Image 1 (spheres, rainbow, N blue to C red):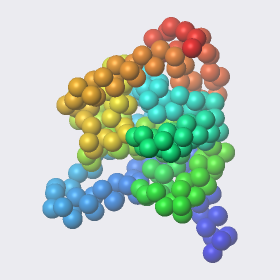
Image 2: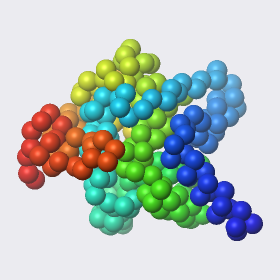
Image 3: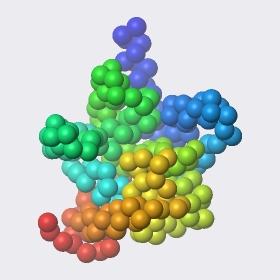
Image 4: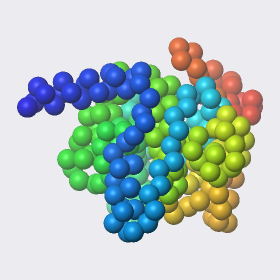
Length: 233
């Protein structure tokens, strides 16, 4: 059983290094919830390559979710430490999950906070960081993450909320989508609240410090940031 588990999981990670991810466990879980609640089934998802997305989209999610994505190897220990200190102080709960961890959870696992689930998340995070490139992790993340009720991935949210293709999203659109990611079923990029608009503006400011996302096999040029302006912290 142990050999079968490791063999099957490693094979799945290797295959998904090259194959599109059309369905995830969360998609099926959400559809089951829709049926239980007597709602109409909705699953809006279209796979597109990273090259067919607005170049501001990876920058926006890094600014919002994981500013050290291109530097760490799956785990941002500084963010984890800061979140732990914040949570011990009794403040609003913060997470320390990286884009790599969120991708591992979205593609291979289910929602939850149990130690078993977190342990498996760490295992898959290590696997995808070892087998996949940063470009592939970002591509799968932006195609699989929940971006609204029954909406998954940047192409689907672009079509449903902005009436365009993922490649046509503006810098402002991308920042607004990223602003909803902590809770995309509560926060809407189609009808943003004042709070969402403020978060979008904050993310757009942070994007000025984030390098443009490199293409496969290309090194990061720190002089090239979103908007073409390089600023030091």
